[in-house]
Amino acid sequence: MAGRDYMGIPREEIPWFPTIDADLCSNCGSCLDFCTNGVFVQGDTSVQVVNPYNCVVGCDACARDCPTEAISFPDKRELIQQLRQLREVYSNR
Image 1 (cartoon, rainbow, N blue to C red):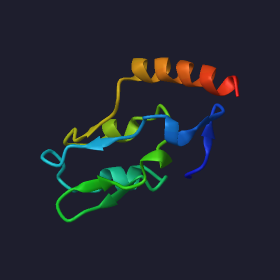
Image 2 (cartoon, rainbow, N blue to C red; image 1 turned 135 degrees about the vertical axis):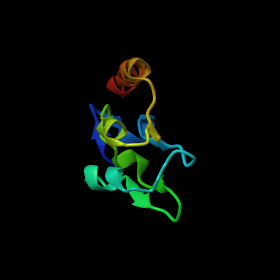
Image 3 (cartoon, rainbow, N blue to C red; image 1 turned 90 degrees about the horizontal axis):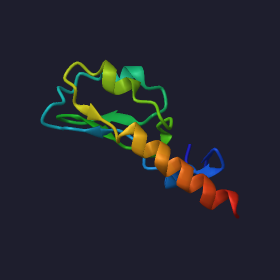
């Protein structure tokens, strides 16, 4: 999915993707089963985020599916503010 846009903004400019707390992750793979975008891979001791920009902007459903609450995302209010600023920048190009 690299090289794609979101609302005319290069996806790589939008800081929206999951973070895994390795201390909480049980390596159960529920996020791997849930997410079909190839964001995660199973590591030796915890799941890892390997394709962060494949994550759908604004989606945090995998975090709600995680039984150990090991997945976190940035604040959605901050995301909305960043998207407004980025849209302004990219609409003037």
